[in-house]
Image 1 (cartoon, helix red, strand yellow):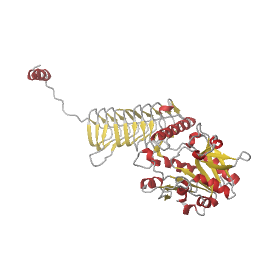
Image 2 (cartoon, one colour; image 1 turned 180 degrees about the vertical axis):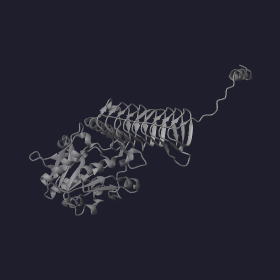
Image 3 (tube, rainbow, N blue to C red; image 1 turned 120 degrees about the horizontal axis):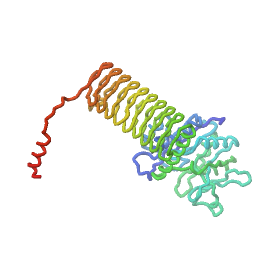
Image 4 (tube, rainbow, N blue to C red; image 1 turned 90 degrees about the vertical axis):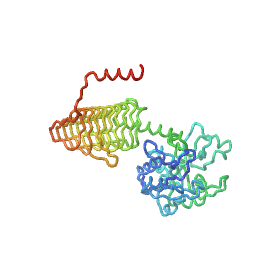
Length: 447
């Protein structure tokens, strides 16, 4: 794209069918709010300015789209009225203005680039993105000139005559405007309709009346999905997941059962990563090369180094950093902890607010007791240390390099490097006590 591009994202809708306390466009797909998907697509288009139109009393939405400027549509009087809420920011712009909808997160950068290129190519006043659904009922029809392909009008379904209703080419709602004439076009749109609203679709009629040309660009129906209900949110999620999985596999990851793997929009997978079935990636996960993530593992906001082995049934919580060649095994939870290169936490352990040194071994059932009810405390385990099974490390605690902790110990304070520490209660034997106890209880209970 050779000319300046600005983007207006419409996000003022109430979304009543979502039956939610938060704005519709803040509901997440692949771990990210829908509105941010749209904003990020605009960023990939190298938009110089992105503006978001919000409704009244949407402070959380304003926070989510920051630092992009927001403009309030106080009275919801239609889509053209919504765009004009940002009129002062639109004034003086040149080039292209793309109007997107925050509840339509599936449009790709490639599709929108074609739309902008089409507007520039003919210096059209308005270019509309259209699609051909299997059932066009309910959609506005794009009426084009068979001679030159220009867009003549957008006719709403209920206003179509028989000939227009037979048209399969429909309006997606997304438009690109010539920036220099956009405000004049929008301000000329009237509200002489049943709802008394100002419709963006009327921009085509206004532009042509002013002697300007308009065209339509076709896109696959899948991209046009607008989310207005929880059911449609689930459909959009499924489409997005399919795209993310395909991208992961194209880029060199093996997904043994792709349909059971859930990816976040920002999941980063290295080459030759193998992901077994039923693995969940939350936002903020980066995985190195040649990593294996076994079934039923859950990762979020963490980093996994090259050739590490994770799971099955492992949970990596925010702040987990897993070093190269490290092993995090079954039913292990890591939170805000560094597991250094080659270290092993093989099973049934919790490591939180800690460092586990290179090639250290954490025995089964070991936990870091990091929370005293008020504060999180740190545990430091040196390189090559060996922590016996069922040990409790009561933070703050420091275990030196090469130290060995006997199984079943409760450790506080500092353990010197290469030391052996065993901390257990003294064994007490009472021969025959169990038999006497059973006989006493049987007599007492009459059994």
